[in-house]
Amino acid sequence: MKTLSQTWFAEGFIDFELKKYTLLAYLQEVNKNFGENKLYPQLADIIFHYHNIVKFRENKKFLQEQFPKRLTGIQLENLQLLYEQMIEDDELMEELETIIQYAAGEMKGTIRNGSEIYEFVEQKIQIEPVGLVPLDNKEGYFFLGQGTSRSTLVYHYRLSIFEKHDEQYRAIKTTFVTEWQRSIANTYENMKFSLIKEKKDLPNPAVYTIETPLSFPVEETLLPIAKRCLVRYIS
Image 1: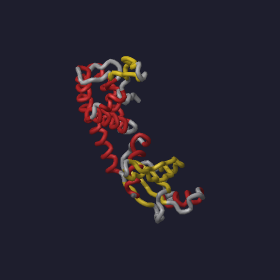
Image 2: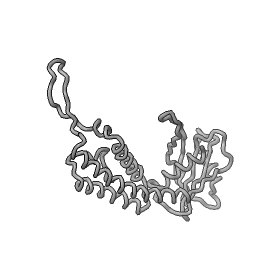
Image 3: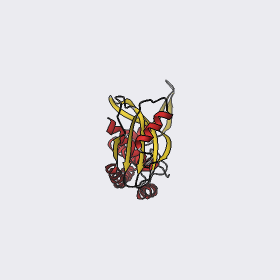
Image 4: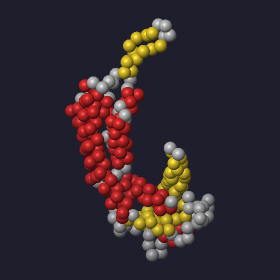
């Protein structure tokens, strides 16, 4: 995957045409993956870069703190190094503003495309519990199925809570367990019974089915969105 550094827009030779070429090459690959319904890690990556340049546009100090400083002299009285900031509000900064304004617009359009795919997949996902769900549902399993395929991917999940900026968030960690084939003789209920029989560490797990009538790339799209949907469903 073609990536951009955090300060790609201000590294090396700062020239609008050069940075435009760099950006468009990156967006071309992102859009190519979106065209194949592959959202991750591309969607998260471009959202990060968009917020990064918006943050710079709102606060020029963001870039000034990251730019290297040039030694300009030594104050003999206290041996303190004097530095001169390489970035000032001059022609260089104006070129950066032009680059950022263009990049923000292009990225926003690509993010919109990815978000539309995300919302479409999300709307197609259905979650149902398998049997009775215990009071403690922070750990368990989910069965992931899509399209007309009888293939069922089995994952173990564990929910955790972390704090950020004085707010609490739920995170989910998943581990692939196995792949089973659904049939009249091997229903979701039978799969749950098999898990309980084989995995003695979870004698009474919460188990859910996550299904969609359409088919999407599992690792790049379906699984990441399914995990987020499950967190919201459980919460």
